[in-house]
Length: 364
Image (cartoon, rainbow, N blue to C red; front, side, top):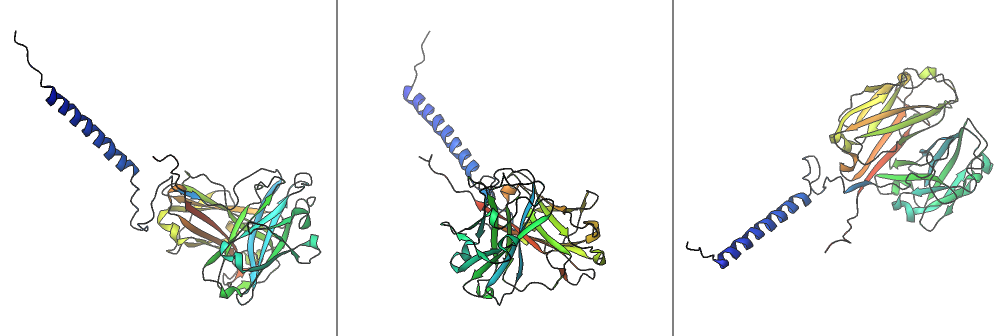
């Protein structure tokens, strides 16, 4: 039998070509997997939508749990754009005596970084300071600190406690660059860890405040975003308030809500929690605003007891896949004729998403 001769050169060429084809296929697959997702038409093409690239940018991350702190709310209150003073208020509610838990704790306030060089002083006032303004200590990182014991009482339980904050600027508020400015607060334990239920965020706009009716009906109120995870597809906002007096004369009033317009393309549904505990769908206008009857959300005759409800925003994607940026939310209660807002009912909060820093430490 005649043996077939094998052309070794042709065989080696064939193996080399097969190997190159496989390598090319792997490279092509890698390019496809590593290419950024194309942004939808209503998103800036420069913004890549990738669940691993966008993360929440929080000033104070969730820390330690101290039981019996019901809430901690920071809100902007009275200010005049023609003045150089901005007023905020922090309110809280302790269920039991917190003397041992809150020993050696301090409040830490962080203002918008654009204000860092524009602040002359930050002061606080409460019953503990005998209603006198006391300066907070400015820390090396630009934040401001004051011991808990100087502004609040650990043994005052079952009632709303609060202290005022005054930010004194070098120039008038209306001389600041137009837009919004943020403020964040947290109570830090003796190990500088934020205490949960004391962390809150707010913002103010460079514009005159809306027309408010000055009343003594509301002790305080606040609006904040509930804790969430990056893969969650909904945001829950918590509105908490106290009536100091019976507010039945405003039973025909409404709550006015505003959701960031930039978020609207990704919102599938918005619901509000009514007094029966159920979530009811609402209709929003093109600017992300809607109204709801006050008496369906809170009891106007319940005095001195915290009342709360939630606004649920359902999204068409995980939070981590939203475009980076800052999303603003607000809520306020109107008078019975719905023409003015009740003082101390207006509240703001925000969500900030930023790009995750790229780590190339493992790169070749």
